Image (cartoon, rainbow, N blue to C red; front, top):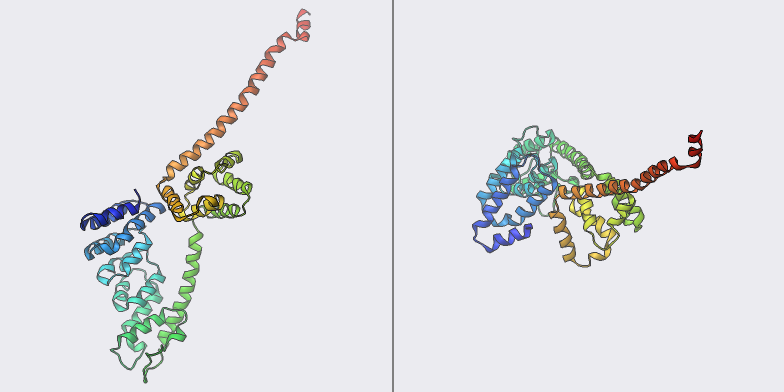
Length: 350
């Protein structure tokens, strides 16, 4: 049953169904010692569509539960962090799924309430700590009207963006006696720009830094060439199987064997689909065909796919053994026939 089926059940039945499903899904996920990427994705697919239908108490419960979870789903955590601070506080204080860049953006959008919760994080980045202190002490960024909340929000957003110099005075918000930010605030902005640039580079590197990245790139590029032999060779190398077996996996208009092969390599569904559509471009003429593929891929357990690959390898060994058997029999027959050879009979008479 897919996440959409769960969602429809929650909508059709009583109002409390979404609440129970939302809480139960997160509780079950938090009990996993080391969830896989597939399980993390499944939780996001299930809970995010239900998010708007659950109560504040359920959101608060889930935020507290995920704050202690080492492998919390990032999309769900970010959604919860956008909630008021009385819901988001456990995640802002403890969650490891919230990066420094996320924290800066949250401070820019929500101001001091979120910033004060973030300040309680252990090992908080010194630059973010300086930013929060600057917000707590408005004399670092002096304005004519200290009670102007919009101006304070403007200062926060200015400190969190890469082009802050051009946004210090926004149209319609400049006041006659407003002074330029102080030296401490300017230094904080400079350090934030540097940290965000570094963080973006690290995030880009992290996207490809997972096991099988090189294999994926090789399969993707060979599939996109349109040359079947190139792709089949790359697939044989990736699965450690014979070329003939890899060739048979894509020999007909049925992507099921290829789907199992890609699932055994633990590719994400979007990467698996890109490779499959490059090999079988004619099988996905409309969105429903794509949806069917993704559902089949999600429902295929990796252990099942690995078992299929092991079966292919076993067939290779079995075939090799069968091919070797006639040769062995022929050699034995030839050896036995030597007893009747004329040369041996002559020698025996001697």
